[in-house]
Image 1 (tube, rainbow, N blue to C red):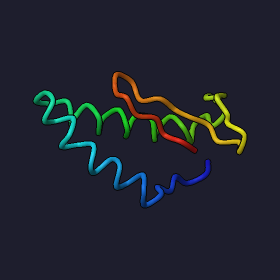
Image 2 (image 1 turned 60 degrees about the vertical axis):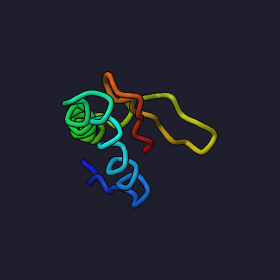
Image 3 (image 1 turned 135 degrees about the vertical axis):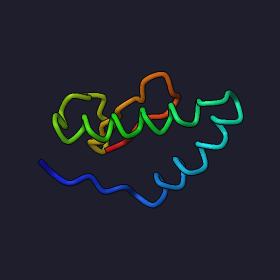
Image 4 (image 1 turned 45 degrees about the vertical axis):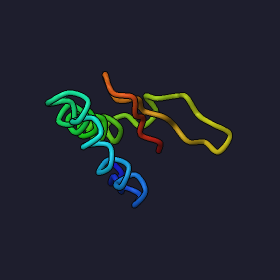
Length: 72
């Protein structure tokens, strides 16, 4: 299993998204964090599970109930 490394920009997106989501509804920021961590656990287990590749070969893992995707 390959290690997961987060791009600095992705870390900033997550950090910035937390208060935005939490401001929309109490607890929604926590749901963002939970969905993100869950997806990070799924991707290394089966990296080909998400076949939505772009022209550069990137895959997109959408987060459940959150309007974010992890690009890898």
